[in-house]
Image (cartoon, rainbow, N blue to C red):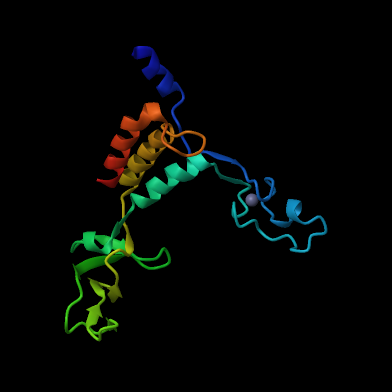
Length: 182
Ligand SMILES: [Zn+2]
């Protein structure tokens, strides 16, 4: 299928699909098309954040699988990993990550009176009492991030306009998703 390959290369996706923002009609301001009398004033549109364009459903699905691939839950943290739990936090090196146990500072009291300890994550910056399912953003090198973005673009090419996997691209989409979460 040389022809198909050539076509795919020619139309290589280079961004998460966006369109003119539907909330602000591409003005970047919320009030423009929603209130004729400008009750809300010239506020920055929160859907596109003033960028005037917003992700399409297909773009959202591809961007979301990319964003998810940059994070892992507490249970997948290992000593030495560089992580942060919020984007405004400094990066920290994981020293220890384990289920909570007796002796840990804080705990929750179950309805039967027994104690439930927070999942324990210790970094070089601080100690976190958290949950097993809390997501942590893992530091990626520029190259690692680039590779994941390219995979997400290929994933986007497998999606329908509604952001669902197109039947004919199911195998490819599953393969890419697996590669992204590896
Ligand atoms: Zn907007």
